[in-house]
Image 1: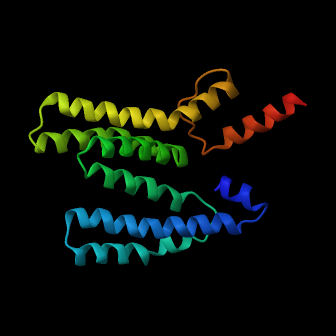
Image 2 (image 1 turned 120 degrees about the vertical axis):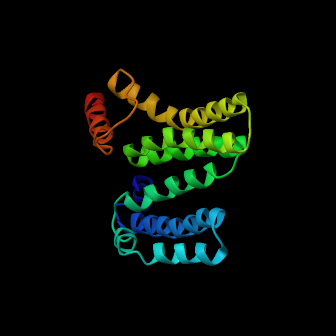
Image 3 (image 1 turned 135 degrees about the horizontal axis):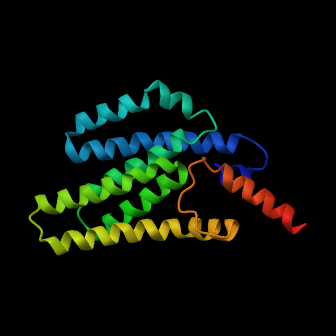
Length: 182
């Protein structure tokens, strides 16, 4: 949202458009996830229910992260439904994106690892194959989180792995940092 607002100037229109796009992506990803486990008709019904869900309709018009976080959460679930190492890396990256948007997204990491374990176990894979998938997932997560970790370490003088205040510390830290330089 901040990037959209920074690029468009001091207007909320760009942020609202980003939320509307996120709502559309949420509907599309709902269809894709549902299609992995159900028929096309059931997936279309799921996508239609999400598209008409009142909360989604309300939050897409607001400048809030509720609509934004559903995209990386659903992308993580979709990536977890595939067994490739690329999908494992994507699930790690999308988990990090969800965590950066809403810190509660960190709960996806153990769920993603459990999903990898169950998928490999069901497929009859041996233990090292699951471990490789877990390492790739964690590497994708760490790679996407590294810029945040470096930024907070520079800002606070120590590593801050996760911010649970919804980004206000980042804003405050930037304001104090600017004041300190003047």
